[in-house]
Image (cartoon, rainbow, N blue to C red; front, side):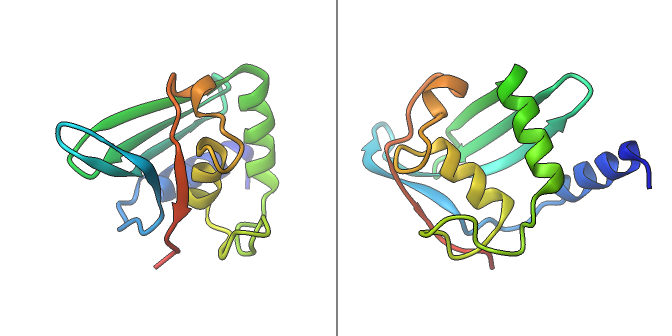
Length: 131
């Protein structure tokens, strides 16, 4: 299977709507209205332009967007291409899901990359599991 076919397959799988159980639970709720969680709404892996775009949706429809570009995006695209998502990746991880890995990279209790790629921080803990 060519690399392009694999990428298309991955993009199609990621575009399928599934009920997400994994969320970032905020330590301090956002106000007006209170928002305590963000779930992944979409993920775009763009190998050609070397970027990863992530859209997050809050409990009340709030939106946040994150964009990995350049060297970090290339590193993550390569790692995702080789990843075994069927097993836990970290001591505090119960599953090996792609969504859980994304939340871990963004949250303040994980790698805290959100300030760099989202322009804001997500202070809280990763909760939930794959249904």
